[in-house]
Image 1 (tube, rainbow, N blue to C red):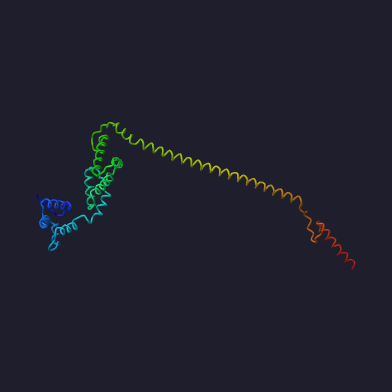
Image 2 (image 1 turned 90 degrees about the horizontal axis):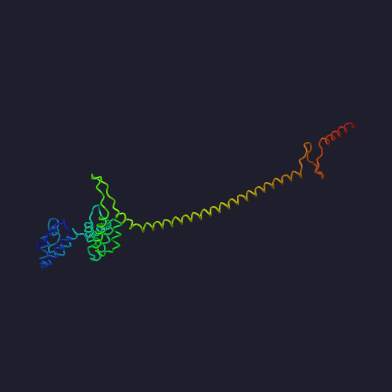
Length: 296
């Protein structure tokens, strides 16, 4: 049994786990553990021994290794990668499961196995990037990420057995592909209930909108009727006012007839209100003047 060497290219946590198991199996004491650990460090990882001090211990060397090559300071980065991880085109479910499990182990190194399994299960379901497959996996309530992988694999296998694969675009076979009736039957069974519910909901919304429009039309019709009645009443009042004004004008003309062209108003303010003829008055005046001249 031989301990593998560590040169920073592999996983540090994997190397430390193997080193701990081997030391426990071989019953090494602290001195044996220290020298075997130093002997297993190679390349850049061996430079840690330069900074370990004159009398380092196994814990000191492991602390330096985790500080320089570990993932303790990169947990937030791995958590972000777990959140945004999605299944790539043509990627198998097994590869996705392995990648998710690795990222969760790196993002939560100190968590319990139950918590890590729960986080990995949720991240795996989200990473499927297929709403229909996600719904089928969630409906079966998997307990662990392995259960979710098993359910997703079965669902994909069933789907592939029912729906034939699409032909390659570069293929030269131009034969007509036979229709698979079972495919449409399965799809219709899955989509009948949601379609009816959607139709009923849409019909209810349309009926409600039509009722609102009918109420609005009725209110607009009533408002137009009121405006029309007000307009007719205003026109009627205006016609009555015009007729009254004409009648008043005619009455004024009848009571006060216009004066003749050869008359003028009485300047002396006579009580009778009639006009005197200016021609006769001036004639008598001139007569008086002539009379006085002759007497003199």
